[in-house]
Amino acid sequence: MSSQLIINCKLAGVHKQQGPLRGAELAELPCIEDGWLLIEDEHIAALGVMKDIPTSLTTHPAIDASGCWLLPAWCDSHTHLVYAGSREMEFVDKIRGLSYAEINARGGGILNSARVLGETSEDILFDQAWKRLHELSRLGTASIEIKSGYGLTVDGELKMLRVIKKLKQRSRLTIKASFLGAHTYPPEYRDDHRGYVDLIIHEMLPVIAREQLADYIDVFCEKGFFDPAETETICRAGMEYGLRPKIHANQLNLSGGVQVGVKLGALSVDHLEMMDDASIAALKESDTIGTLLPTAAFFLRMPFQPARRLIDAGCAIALASDLNPGSSPSGNMNLVVAMSCIQMQMLPEEAINAATINGAYAMELGAVTGSLTPGKRADLILTRPIPSLAYLPYAFGSNLVDRVIIGGELV
Ligand code: NIG
Ligand code: FE
Image (cartoon, rainbow, N blue to C red):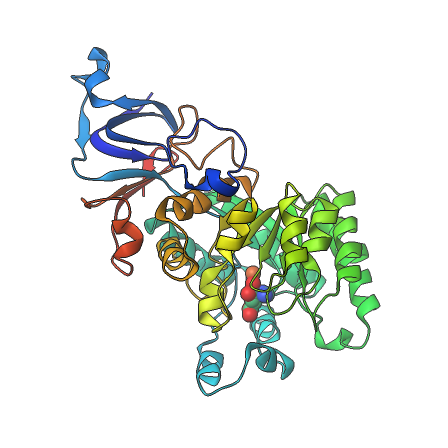
């Protein structure tokens, strides 16, 4: 058995509680001021305060992390990490004044990425995704959800999901896959929505289920994309195969996506830039997690998600990066946490909990990772020496992540 000991550090996220944190609980980030943590193989074996360290460990070789914080690694519960190429030309169009909706309407956006994906081999797609995943692991992400949705044909969606499956098999990160065939209507189905929904339900889903390529079903529930009735039909078809919904809701409009998600018992409803009292009331009464994606709001110059209203209403919220080529070309969770504090008035403790333990629950990994709890996977971030935990989001843009440990191994 391999074991590693980290001593003289501050520990954050020493949670005992089960279940996602909601409302005022989100600000509770249990810490140990002067602590130690023992890793055995891929798990956290034990932790505690330095003055009570067991005598059996006093001669154990150790990393002396004086002045540093040890945190759970980031749990990024919403990404589109697998995509082909990039879309910086649309970024320039946006600078010149076009909106995201206008770019989509003229065949850019998701359709642009779908075209490039169609011309990209599975091996090249895998290599591009692998590099991104490696970069994110160095920034502290150890668990990640990845969506399909740039295929939009049977072959294209299967290609993406097979790449995600290969990433799952080869990477140390814990990965969950969501099938997002309903990302947009491909051009040939623009006037035949029923035809595309049928393709998803009768051609894509059976193969995906047979090859066990997805954990969740996702739909972009949005004006001009999939309406609440279509969203429900597609999600119910996925649920027949055991895929729980995790849906894109209320990004550009009050789409009704939150209510559909809650009605279907979705694991999460994600984005939530546009929330009214009725959507907040629906979410707070449910077990569905509201996942906020501030870097997407930032990149599209949209209003930020109303995190304070959601927390104060008692909702369970998570933070994620939405990494994708169109609305969040960064998957840096350190930036997500900083932006949530700066722009959404989340306390550093709230943002860290939302990006770790609640993110883990938004991938059904809450019992496995997301906190410094003995028995969980040793998915850890060790910071550089910093004066306080609030310094992390405060000094945004500095890379304060010194070492990342995923499943007990240094990356
Ligand atoms: O989550 N909103 C829909 N899907 C992505 C963006 C996709 C794209 O522009 O490529 C999102 O923001
Ligand atoms: Fe997204």
